[in-house]
Amino acid sequence: MTEPLFEVRGLTKRFRGLTAVSNVTFRVAAREIVGLIGPNGAGKTTIISLISGTLVPTAGDIVFEGRHIERLPAYRRARLGIGRTFQVMKPFPGLSVLENVTVGALFGTGGGERNRTRAEERAREWLKFTGLERRMDQRADALGGPDRKRLEFAKALAMNPKLLLLDEVMAGLTHVEVDEVVELIKKIREKGVTILVIEHVMKAIRRLADRLLVLHHGQQIAEGRTDEVLRDPRVVEAYLGKRRQ
Amino acid sequence: MNRYRWLALPIAAAALAVVPWFTSDTIVQYGINALLVATLAQAWNIIGGFSGYPSFGNSVFYGLGTYGTAIAMAQLHWSFGSGLVFGAVLGVACALLFGIPILRLRGPYFAIATLGLAAVMSAITATVEIAGKNIGLILPLFRGDTLFYELSLILLVAATGTVAWIARSRFGAGLVAIREDEDAAQVMGINTTTYKVAALTVAALFSALAGGIHAYWITFIDPASAFDPSLNVRMVIMTLFGGPGTVLGPVLGALILSAVSEVLASQATGVASLFYGIVIVAAVLLMPKGLLDLVQGFRDSGWRYFVDNVRRYRI
Image 1 (cartoon, chains in turn cyan, purple):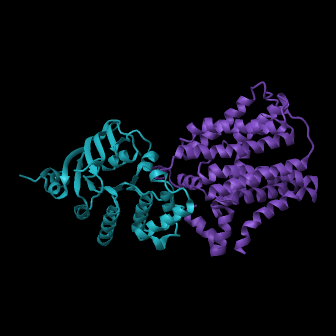
Image 2 (tube, chains in turn purple, cyan; image 1 turned 30 degrees about the horizontal axis):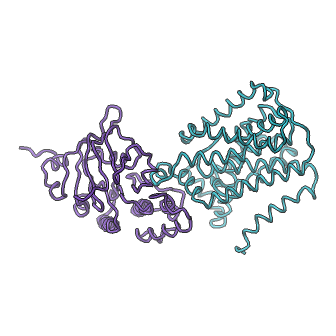
Image 3 (tube, chains in turn purple, orange; image 1 turned 120 degrees about the vertical axis):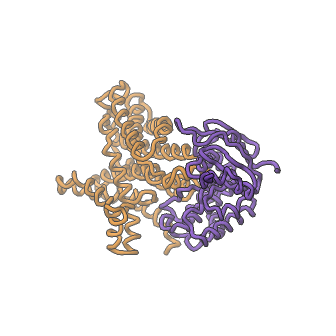
């Protein structure tokens, strides 16, 4: 593996008695797509929140481009180049689609583009890229499901992130829409963005991820190349239950 | 037509500026009050309308401006200018000091904490020797309504200019993002704490200056009138009525509502006391996004605008 873009060592998060994430360690190389899979409640979203800074880890290190970031507030991490989407989508509901994405361009990596006109131009490009151009002037809360997901993407992309954390962006999409989003994510990687993606849609994860990290009850039960991990009996068991003898 | 739209504001300001030379003393006195209240509404707009933090502590900043100016002039015998600065420093210091802990709270918790701040400040002032305890202070008498009128107008123009800048700036985009979804704003790289405290501080500055001008004009102040929570309620109503988060909404809202309430107070005293209550209920039900949105919405969909609002917010 080449020099990792970022690395997580012994990451642990306890909520009172519950250990949501326990001693998780992995590395992600630049331009890699790593899938984070596991049953519901395995701690996947918690890991993304710990990396993006929405949650503070109980223990462990998060190293991004050689720098410890586990104690930095979320906005500082965003400025270093970490963008995320939310599983429960968080558009700015009362703003237009264009305004939503402009916020990403105005802030984000390195503090963003400070000039509002230029930030708006940049936002338009991302709207084109995500296929939302014709919805530009609509209010974000007027968008339908798939367009809302596109908006989550566009907002995060406008931040110009080096690392993009995607939290279940395909849930609730039709087959055709899943294919579209898979293509979109591949296009984003071609732009040089590293991606950590939580996904339940197996068909999508198989086509996207170079490597997989499997979580179960907050523990890391497997890690490796996608095809190998998906054949691992422990992974099959965690997902489907034990085969009866 | 649109090319000349920006001219409308300087023309309106100039028209307001010459009012004292063409009207009666009563109108000028009413004008001072209306302009100061419009400034307060505009200041509330920055923290309440743009950042979405419903502050009930703005009357504290106003009160501190009032007392700062009064203490400086009545007790320390400073000039009016230094008094204004002193009052503004107190207001801004209060916003910086209490803003950081209080702005960690969200929604109704924030509102209640600011309400508490107002009660505490009023109580403290009533026990401080230099602030005249609960009797209050008398400032040197200065008759010059025209001067106070022009000062109030300048302050309102400055506040509105600041809001116009905020509305177009990166700072304003950050505040609006915080209002719409604070968690999302933070992971997009917005230093939410600094932004909120900055918004509250700017609001405090204009509120305190308005308090200072009012103190010297009215010449007598006491804790009950300086820290009057109903003044804060008026700022909220006027801003919501005109259009929170817009540049001109709070000014229009304040000027219209003060005019109507002034007329009612002299013509129909019974109705006058009910007036703000009725306005807030009607505004929340029929035009929750304010006057400016109403104008736009009415043009687009006529009377249906009201029906749509009632339906959308399921009242």
